[in-house]
Structure formats: structure tokens, C-alpha cells
Length: 503
Image (tube, rainbow, N blue to C red; front, side, top):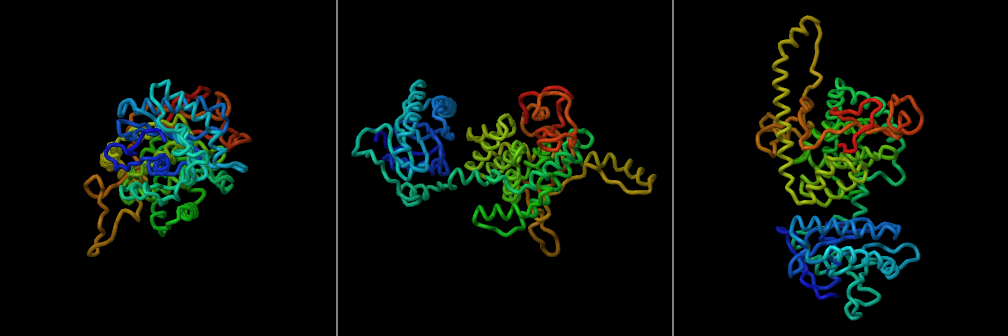
């Protein structure tokens, strides 16, 4: 092994674990990331004489070796630039190349196959005047060093890794409170559609929901009513998931959630969340007893965005990442937000959250903005209702019938609104922001809680031009085009081309 020891995988303020050999370094990787990487290139910045770990970048290893040089340069540049901004220029980089053997392969075969990628990383780091102090290949429960030529330290057959959770590093990490959430692939599986595309009825329901809801979302007069319906259905689903029995196994828990959510109502919420104001208000379900069922709901909705609707997963995936981050789970937050950007690279909501999470910012600052937006919306609704009460009463008296405001408040899910009853009186659920009972209103959308520019609608699969009415054409989706998204600000004019950036 190269003469670097006492590497402590920790950010400032986090517990540390000291490692001294490349085998211990390999054992520490899952605890450093919070998950077990699968087929990934992981670069970690090293700072100071004791080799304290700093920024980390994880990327999938391209299957085509012709892409390795470009990927190595891009990932190295991203790590050095980000680390320099946060902690100063790194004193070195540790690279991990993780891939399991395929049919007919061994760990040694994988190590030799990935050697050019390790060399590309070393050259890219050298171009930035940052040395690669160690480069390890992890495959078939063994590790190899690309930097250490000593057979006594790094034998050609590799060094065997201990079973997960049994090494001294694992014990030290557990004592320090560092946990591993499982493999990256297993975490992504909870957020992605099944490999077989899932239930065919999901796509049919999304076709129907797009045909009925998207034209209304594009109408300024009907969009608030769709937002109200979306938030009301979401509240009902949160209540339903909250009442389900707890299941420990993640796969069984996801299957239970899928069974509890109806096909049509899931499709309606997915389409409704394509409106950015509705999505921003749904993000207010982010803390306390609301957070666990909200995270489960966003996962379940993301799993249903299959086929031509894969881009629709950006909204529920971004919400899942936000709720995970808000509840302190940065590992799942990074995974969910990265998948949201994979579904829609220009999705500004996910871009902002991903950047803030990666920079180590506190989620509480965003929670305060969302809480304030909810309170402002509630006051606006109260003022509007008070001002229109007299006119509404006169209209009801004149017509002899009844009427209700189209923009009535949407309350919290009923199962979570009250914890219990004391002396025959309902005990309100306290708000984590202070104060008493919290109500989320479907009215008075106000400004977006994050400072982003309005976006235009997304075009169909074909070039710009007059939009085919929904239900009027063959092919993909109800109109033969890719599903459209909506924003009540800056919709694309008929026949125009949309702006590049969107939310």
C-alpha cells in the first residue's frame, strides 16, 4: 500500500473512523457513502496530513471503454472544483472502482479490465495538480491496489475482504453511528419502475389522466380546481398509508403500499404534480408524522411512471429526495434527487435541492420557507373568504341554492391531524414550527418557495407547431405525443418552441 495512513472518512462535525491498510479502506467505503456501491466509480477527496476524507463523487462505470476518458475527466474536475470551494484544494484523491464479475469473469479479470479507467483517473487528477494517493478495485469480495507494486502488501490475487459488518472498521463505524443502507441498486429499485414495466393498467390510467387533466392544467381558470383535487387525493393517500401496519422488509413494504394505492388516483396525482405550484405545496408535507407516509407515497408514485411517462417521475422523485433530506437521510436524498435529474436533467426543483444537499446546507432553511409560504397562503385564503362572505351569502339567497368556494382549504390527512382524544376533546397534533394545528390550503398559491424562474410547457415528441388535441391522434399517449407538463406561468404559446430550462 502507498505510504498514506490514518485516513479518517469524515466531514467536519461527523464521527471519524481511522483506517491504515487498503483492505480497511475498502471496508470503510460503504460507511463513508452510506450504501454499498455496485458498478460505480467513486472518487473521494483527501485533505490534510492525516488524510481526512472530504467531498465524494459517485458515477456509474460506462459499459463502453471509449467513454472512460471523458467520464474520468468530468468526475475528477467535479470533485476538485467542489472540494476546493468547500474545504480548499484537496491534497489527494482516493479512487474506488467497484464492479462484480460477469459470466465467465473473475475478480482478477475485472481488475485488469478496469485498469485503463484507473489510469484515466490518475491522468485527469494529475492535470489538476492533485495526486491519486490510492486507487482500489473492489470485485468478488476482494480488493486490488493499482498504486502499490509490493506483492507482500498487495498480492496479485487480491486481498480478501471480510463479510459485511464483521470487520474492525464495521465495529468502529457502528460505534460512531455510521450505518449502511444496503446496495445502491437496492435503494434505486425502491424508486424505479419494475424491470418488466409493472402493471399495464398504470400506463392506461396515465393516458386517461393526461387526456382529462392536462387540458385543464393549461387553462388558468380550471388549474386551481385541478390543484385542489390533487392535494385532496394526496391527503387521502397519506392517511391510508399511515394506517397500514408497519412492515420491516423494504420489498414487502413497497408491495403493500402499491396495493393500497388505486391505479386511477395514483395517475391523477402524478399528472397533477406536473404543475409546479401543486408540487411546491405538496412539499410542505415534509416533517413530523407526515414525513414517513409522504416518503412512501412519493416512492410508490415514482415506481408507476413507466414507458413514455418516465419523465413524469421527476416530480415524485424530487419530492422523495426532499422529504428524505428533511428527515435527515441524506443518503436516500442524494439517490432520489440523482434519479430525478436522470429522468429530467433540466428539472430545476431537483437541481436546486441536489446542489444544496451536496453542499451540506441545512434543510431547516428550506423548511422555514415552506412553512412561511403555507402560513401566508392560509392568511390570504382567510382574507379572501371574509371579503366574499357577504357577496356569497347574497348570491345564495338570490339563487335559493348553495355554493362553495372552488379554492377551499385542503386539511392535513385526517389520520394525522389528531393524536388522540383527552377528556372527550380532540388533542391537536402540534406543529414542529411552533403554534397549534396546521392546515395546508389549496388556494392562494403565491410565489414558488425556491427562487427559480418560471418555466414553459414541455413540447411533445415532434417538432414545434400546433399542438394536437389530446385523444386526437394515434401512437404514444392519448395524442400520439409524449405527455405534456403544465405550469400556470409562462405556458408555451401555440406553435412556439419552449425555453430550454424548466421546472
